[in-house]
Image 1: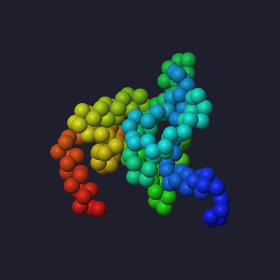
Image 2: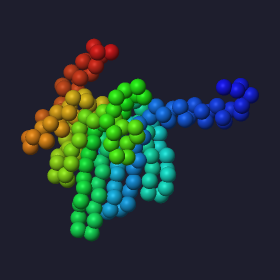
Image 3: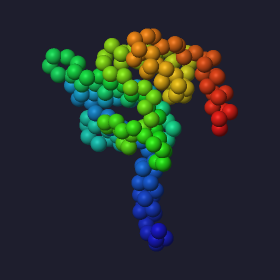
Length: 172
């Protein structure tokens, strides 16, 4: 790097490098037609593209829920929720629409009744006093599997959360 370059140039390079580290999610909001939103997650970067579109970024390892909903004049035509873990540049990932480059899918549910069950499961994690992005990744896999099988997921309790924190401490 040229040391004589203005400081703004160096910062721009560092910013571009930092952006490559993030998992970016494109959020669009067209009232009652096309709505993408983040239900939970720690946003590391937020850029407004247009009045209806913004791009949010998540650091590697961050867990977040991305909701996609579309409707036409006759009602809902598509609703989905994904709980994802943002990946580091050298990690394998699965591609998803509106998520760049992609992420590790912990939960993927389609159809409004099932999406609503996931939203209720998120609410119950919050009711237990745990931020959903801090909950064990295995819990989101469990919720996915139970709802896909037509069963109710087990609640995420503070005891489960403390066990997850101990396990994570041992693994690190």
